[in-house]
Image: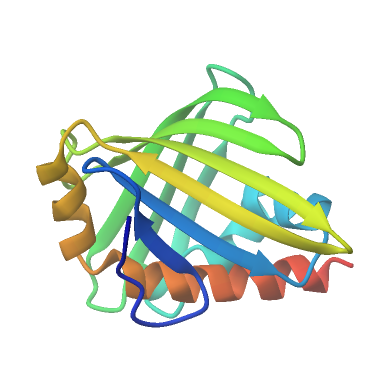
Length: 162
């Protein structure tokens, strides 16, 4: 497993040729991290990090339901992702697909896990891609910087709910 984290407090590792694993601890209980992760008006507050403005969030939080997030990046271009929920265990786990609409063939299967201990929550996201090339393309897109900013804001939003 190699580590590629270069900034922020989330740790990014590559457990397999087609996987990215993101791990970050939050100073908030799991139920509040869950709420911030799954509530559209709260997602708008953190998803873009420092890189733009979220213009649309759709969440149909049920197995088979769909999600879609859209932002206008600071460069004036639109960035959108969407997916389908495959498994949901409230406050603990979400398995969903994720498709970057700019590269619709580069989808991943993401497993979000929340584990709470003493009021703090460890969030992990395991993203699995169809190939190493697609995974590496995602890594080379600059995803980590934006992800670190987004997770910093997610913590702020979750903590503000307590």
